[in-house]
Amino acid sequence: MTMMQPTEGELVILQVLWSDGPSTVRAVNERLNAESEREIGYTTTLKLMQLMLSKGLVSRDDSTRTHVYAAELPREKAQQNLLQRFVDSTFGGSAGSLVLRALGEGQTSPEELAAIKQLIKQLENEASND
Amino acid sequence: MTMMQPTEGELVILQVLWSDGPSTVRAVNERLNAESEREIGYTTTLKLMQLMLSKGLVSRDDSTRTHVYAAELPREKAQQNLLQRFVDSTFGGSAGSLVLRALGEGQTSPEELAAIKQLIKQLENEASND
DNA sequence: TTGCATCTACGAATCTTTTCGTATACCTTT
DNA sequence: AAAGGTATACGAAAAGATTCGTAGATGCAA
Image 1 (spheres, rainbow over the protein chains, first blue to last red):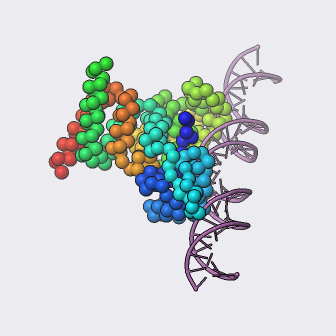
Image 2: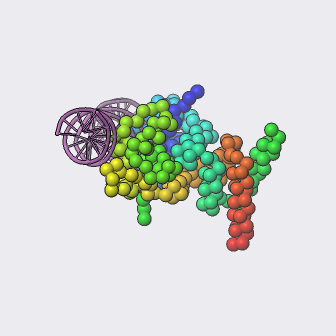
Image 3: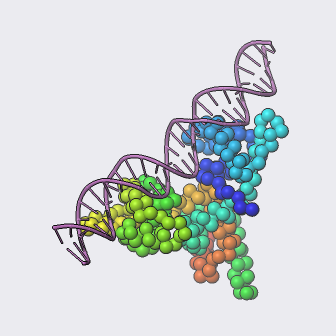
């Protein structure tokens, strides 16, 4: 069950599929161009998505002429893998220092902070019960 | 003051310089080969560090025949920039959800958890004083 | 001093990722 | 049925990152 990890460009496309659900190449391409200054050609997006298909990162419904692509790699799994890599490469393996820096940016909403507090409480309880 | 961001390979070298301080190419190369199965040629490391010099990521003392390189991009700044990019690309911009997942991995020490709790407390106080 | 080890510089091969041009097929509208 | 718009497939260029071979300089040891 080892799934190849997405490249940077593939990740951008996965974001769209994750948030919008199954989409056509056209739809994805327009989303990409909407949120960025740089114009990305249609066939560029197409090619990338075809590559992702061959890697198994996405699936494709080609029962209609205009194919519909869906993310095959679940968001959670991708985030988990990439996070692990990122912690190792950039924070020398320390998740704690990453968290401190992430929170330090001060762009976290009160709701999220509350959720984090609760998770910490839970982790501390588990620890004391070992 | 825009400093070019390091590539993946450059980041590995920066990790060494950050943790060991100013080092020769030989020293860096040996550290890289020590902690990895893959053998990396000496001139490969050399070339990479020369590129990093031209990008300004490192500085170099060439007053002796064997040059000594030092990280020019501070660890904190690099982590901050890369974290921002990572949050955007992988967590759709939500630092909170990154934190939740990072903590969820359960590899955070009690000391770090305590530090995080304290930071949150501080952030909440600041918020209520606005 | 002669030779060996080690250093830097640098061009270029290789690999990966991204980008796009072009050919071709299909649908829709007229 | 012809034309125009939009699709996919695919080769290959372009861009970026990594790797290494080789040449030439310098220091050191016998």
